[in-house]
Image 1: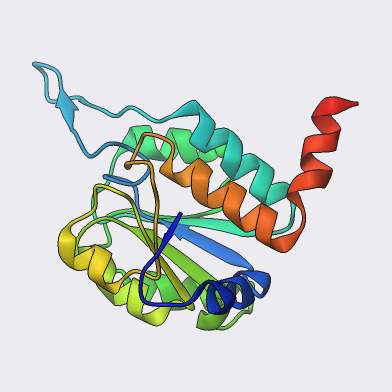
Image 2 (image 1 turned 180 degrees about the vertical axis):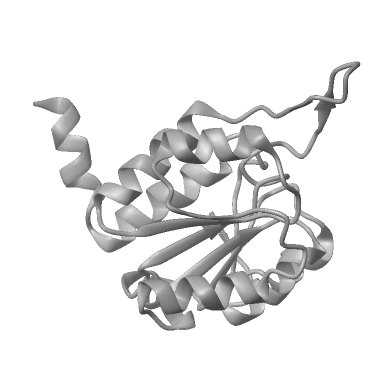
Amino acid sequence: MNFNNTTETQIIEKIKQLKLLILDVDGVLTDGRLFFDHQGQEYKSFHARDGHGIKLLQQTGVEIAVISGRKSQSVALRMKNLGIKHVYQGHEHKVAAFEEILSTIGISAEQAAHVGDDLLDLPLMKRAGLGFAVQDANFAVKDYADCITENGGGLGAVREICDFIMQTQGSFDKILQGYLS
């Protein structure tokens, strides 16, 4: 994880308060490529380790939400499979969904982090307490991010973030012990 506009100490303090991780889909949970068959059916590829990281982070009490500018049945199915309750698709202007999620969960914007890769994500990155950009994000998004992953979107970036949050909040060792016993 690379730190950009914020010191490591500031990031650690923000992560200790974190109660919500908001994810973009295309370019974050996927590598951003869109596949269509001859009938117009859309396909996406999700990384299994990202999904496992999401499930582990949820076990620690951190809520996960998805806000996407596009709408896709494959996203709905994958999010249902991961147990993500807060899924907002077709929201190019993501701020209203962000505000609704904060209200539903009952937390402040400072207790939320957003992961993005493109310009549509900037309004949430600026409002959330912490902004993450994936390694292959647009240069402007990287400029505004507090942290930049070493992995690209759809290639383990979300797992990297989940592990970083759990390690910083002190819950990773307990999760790890569950696999070692």
